[in-house]
Image 1 (spheres, rainbow, N blue to C red):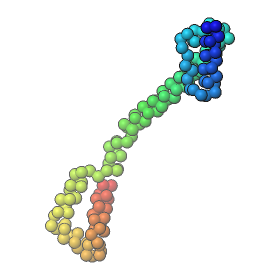
Image 2 (image 1 turned 30 degrees about the vertical axis):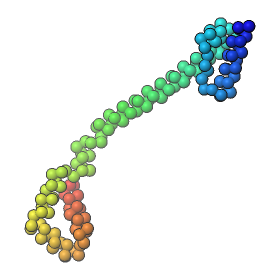
Image 3 (image 1 turned 180 degrees about the horizontal axis):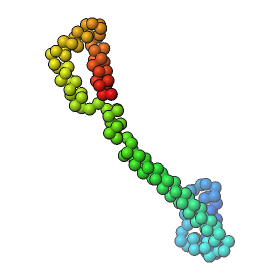
Image 4 (image 1 turned 90 degrees about the horizontal axis):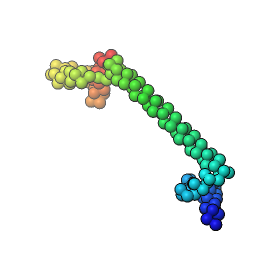
Length: 140
């Protein structure tokens, strides 16, 4: 009687699992022992374990591959993103900006800029663009 009861519970759980009504096969220790004792069910358990191992191994390989890719990206970034050459080509130093501001504050330079503004009919915005363009050109 007890054996049939366990068999019926296992069959019900297995059927729910196969029909995707649950994503885990919940067995009590008593039910698992019963399955292992039955020769026909041993293969079922082995198959379940093999599938679980395959999934775990596949996930492990995927994570390991992603981890290696990220480590390579970090190493690449360390050596390529902020090299002195890329900084020199893509950034204007603070000291150059400070020098330009000092020059703009100089009275003679202010008169020169006013003269440029009048000669070329620049608006204030265009004059600022002109000064910034000068700064960019000196960087090169």
